[in-house]
Structures are given as structure tokens and as C-alpha cells.
Length: 403
Image (cartoon, rainbow, N blue to C red; front, side):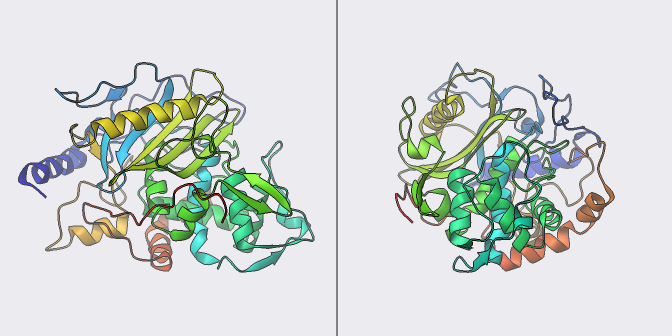
């Protein structure tokens, strides 16, 4: 790392330690209520002071392309998946309903726990509690499915039924929500509050473009995660299913994006359309998250994502970053040890770093208290994170037609 970059990161760490972060109570929009039209006055500064400021954040300079003019998303972020540099952002820490992009956290939490060949006979109670109008892949009680098939149902068709079956295998929905929250805390996804494992609209269920990017970056370290999220189509229960990620599978008004390799889309009444994508050009791997475009055109979330990818690939290597994706808590602690490189991540338990819902329950408090211990156990179960100011991604799996 060069001296200028090291100084920049050290300065960011100082700013983080002194900054006034988000107040302790930033209530999420209740189900049935449209999210606020403007971002809160105070947002988290995790990853850099500029990421807590409203509006576009980008360092324009000679040779750096201007941002696309017609972006309408409430929040978005463009980052380098390997270095963690945030190239540009817009209200990146605005806590908004995530829709099915929450399934990335579900997968990153549970994938290491069940071998893909494990089979499970679905009981009727496994499918209980799904929200009205949930997206489903067609899981049926009384039938036996492999874990691999269930994950294909989660990633390709955003099947809430598959999520509920996998949650049942994990001890139930409530246990899975606690596990997901602990893992979010370990990843320092501190804008995220989990209420349902499938991302269905629920009061106080929120995440942010910044957090969803952290979660995707963590998930992409796992081979199965990369495999499932890059699969275009697969057989499920005797039927052929196709990935609803239109940058991966294409549509009449959205071509397949060059170099796309996942990750996850979502859409609900109150979240609007949400999407996190990963794409590679040459040796450059970018992550883009877009939340809730206000332009109500067909596939708008993918169109705006593609524009941001185009900008990112043109700007990478030329634009000075406006922040960084922080490493998980355990990796940050290790790098802060004597002899380790400096880190700009916020200290564990930084006050005000998470928006606390007004109706937070006692079990949520326990989950926070156990976050470090539980998150570390999940980390050890899933493998050691390779974070040292650079997080090399394994080879991506590009557009797999068949698993």
C-alpha cells in the first residue's frame, strides 16, 4: 500500500472515531407505509465520512467520466469487490426495505451448515408463516428435496417457500432470524435489521446499499454461493426454472450484461425494486447495489445498475475512492493487532452505528449482545476470511446455464 493511501485510511479512521453518527432511533418504515421520501439527516459514516452525507458522492477529476444523468434510485453504491474501494455512492447508508436481496444474508449465514446433497422431506409446518403474495418456487409438502435444489429455488426464483424449508432445517424462522442478525453484526452490516429471513415486507426490516454490498462480498467468498447466484436456469421438481436476475438471464428490454456473475434481485410493494450485482471485466471485479428507482419503468433497477457498472468500469483506476467496504469485525480486530495494517472500520459496538427500530424486541437485544461470539462462530464454520486491505475473490462463475 502506498504512503498516500495509508495516510488516507488513517485519516478516515480518525474521522470515524470523532464523527457524530446516526442517532440511536431511526425507525424503519412499517409494512403498509411508504418509506420516507428523503434520507435521514444523520446516517452512519462507517467506511468513510462521505458515505454518511446525502446525495451523490464522487471525486470527479480530469479523466474521470461523469456519473449517468438519469439515475433515480433512492440509494446506490459502486465498489471494487477486491480492494473494497467505494468508487461512488448516493445515500449509501440509507436504511430501506431490502425485499429479497435480504436472501443474500440468509444464504451467507446458512449455506455452510448443510451439505448440498442433504435431503429433507418437507412437512406442512415447514411452509407455515409465509407472507401473503410471497414469491414461490413450488415446494410441496410431503416431497423430498435436496439442499442443492432448495438453494436453486432461493436464488433463481426467490422462493420464500424454499427459504422457509431451509429455515425449518435450521431450527425455525425465529432461530434463523437471530443467526442472520448475528452474522450481519459480524460483517459490520450495521444498517441491517432482520425480521424475516426471506425479505418479505415487515415492520422495521431494513438494510442499506452499503450493507447489501458487504453481504454480497462475503457471500461471494463461498463456492456454492457463487455457483447458485450465477446459474441462469435449472431443473426444479420436474420443471425448468429461470433466474429472475435480468442482467444474468436477459429480457426483452434488458440484454445480458457483459461479465455478469450474480448476485440477487428483489421487489416488494414497499421496498420497490432492489438489486445487487457483481460483474467482471478483465481483472476488475465490481459490485453495484441499487435500491428503489423512482422511475417506474419495466426493469428500471437493472437498467440503472447497468449504467453504474458501465461508469464503474470506465472510472476504475482513475477515480479516487470516497470510502471503503469495511472487513468483518473479526478480521478488522486481527488487522488492528500489533504488526497488522491500520483499519478504517468503526470499533465494535460504535454508538449509533445501527438504526434501532422503535419496536425492537428483547430477543433482538440478546442477538446484539451475542453478535461477536455468534458471528465469530459462523465465521469459523464458513472458513477464514482473507482480508488485508485487499480481499481477493475466487474465480467467478459466469452465467452457468445448467448446474
